[in-house]
Length: 366
Image (cartoon, rainbow, N blue to C red; front, side, top):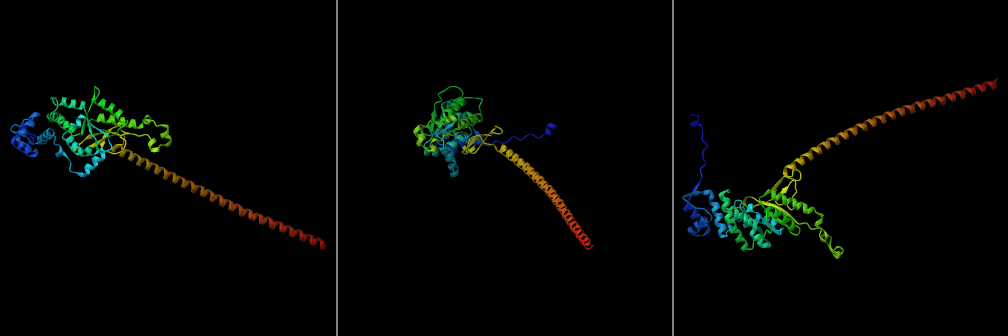
C-alpha cells in the first residue's frame, strides 16, 4: 500500500519536433533544399525519424554550418566585445588551438567567427597541429564518447579545412611522436624565446604547465640576447634591455569567450579569469581576501601595540615629571632653609660684633 501511495518522480517531458519541421526550418535558414539538408545530416550519422528532440536543433545547425563553411551566424553583434577580443589577440604572434575547445559545445564556432575579421586585419593565423586532427579522427568513431562529441569530431575537420583555405588557420606539423601535450610544451619552450604565444585549451593540467614555463622563462637570466660591442657602446638602454615574450594559456567558455589560466602563488591552485597583461602567477581571489584579512588583523595588532606603547610612554613621562617636580620642590625647600640659616648666621655675627664693640666702648670708658 505504501508503494502505491508513494509519489513517483515525474519524468520531465522532452519537447519534440517533427522531421519535416526540422528540415523545413533548417533549409529556410541556410537557403538550401530539404533534400540537401537531409543529405548533410545523414552524412554525419543523424537520421531524422518521425519526431526528434528540439534540443538537438542547435547541433543540426552546427553540422550544416561546418559542412557549408558558414559560421557567420555565430558571430557576436556586440562591438564592445569585438574591441576587447582585438585587444586580447593582437599582441600574440601565434595562437595554438588544442583538441578539446574545438569540440566543446559550439564555443569554437563563436570564437572563430568573432576572431576572423581580427585575424585578417592583423594578418595572423590560428595554428592547429596535425596531432589534433588525428585526435579528432580517433574521437569520431569512439563509441565510448557521447553522440554530440562524435558528431562534432566528424564535422570540425571540414570547418578547419575551410578556414585553412581562407588563410585563417595553418595546419602545424607536430614533428614528433608521443603525447601531444608534451610536444606543445616543448614547442612553446622553443618558440616562446622569440614569439608571443597563446594556447587555447580546456586542459587545466596543460595550461598550468604553460603558465609555469612562461614564468620560468621570464625569470631566466640566460634570456639576455648577445649584443655587439658597438651596440652596447652606442645603443639605447631600451634596446639593450632583455626582451621577454609572453606565453599564456586560455580556455573557451560560453559564446567563445576567452578566460586565461592563472596560478596562485599562495595556494598553488590554478583558476581562470579575464585576460590581463601580467605574469601568470597571480593571487587568486580567496587568497587575496585571506591576505587582506591577515594584513588587517596584523595592522590592528600593530595599532594596538602602538597605542599600548604610547600609553606606556605617557605613563613614563608622567612618572618622570612627578619625580622632577618632587626634586624641584625638595631643592626649593633646601634652598629656603639655607637662606634662613645664612641670615641667622649673618645676624648672629652682627650681634656678636655689636656686643664686642659695646664691650670695647665700656672698657674704654672705665
